[in-house]
Image (cartoon, rainbow, N blue to C red; front, top):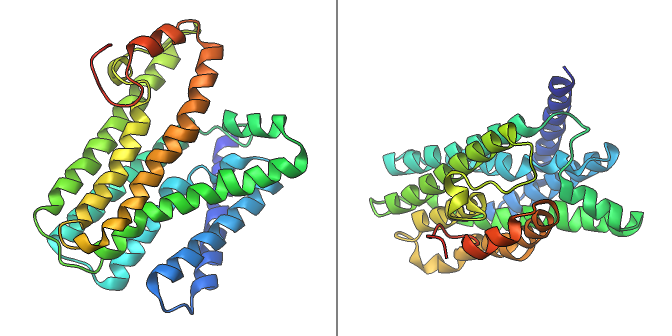
Length: 281
């Protein structure tokens, strides 16, 4: 019941956040600017409640829920209903839905908070912590994901072609990577009490297959757009930003944590690829 109540509260927060975003941007005519203002306003609203509940994991589902909402809204607004567009919408939202369901499965109640947020809170004073909380934990991911969604603005407006299926396939590949990586990790943690490294399934060939899957999804989103709007090549900044975020921030933090908690992690690092799925070194 604690989990159900906590999820109900978070659902209410997100309804309020998206309402705040909608009304903040309602009169803006430029489509990209309107959705950008919507995104920023919704993020600020979510941040306020993460402070109220002293739990920054209130923001965690934003990464997957907002792309789902924006893609559906854009396709309805633009009347995008060709077979190729519907295929993309289904494939993209399969990723979004799976990631959201995975978060619901791991979330317990408001006693749960991502270990990285706790680390930043414990290591910094109140003022610096809230600065990190607002910028690094809330606003930076919002901006990165918005950049990743830029190709969808083109996808919703243009008639697509069969070459876009390459991008759809890459999105499905990334979604599958995340699914099997999460599934094998949950199974490993459920049966192993020792502080050793998971080497099962994809984790035996990549130290971070879930991050590789996420980067692949945003790369695929860009590749869907590229055949019919090559002049917008600079929209590739989205998947590049995701790759930089994971490689510069997320992976180093995770590796440092694992080195301090897993006795065999140093040996694991020497033999298993950092990101790409490759044979052992």
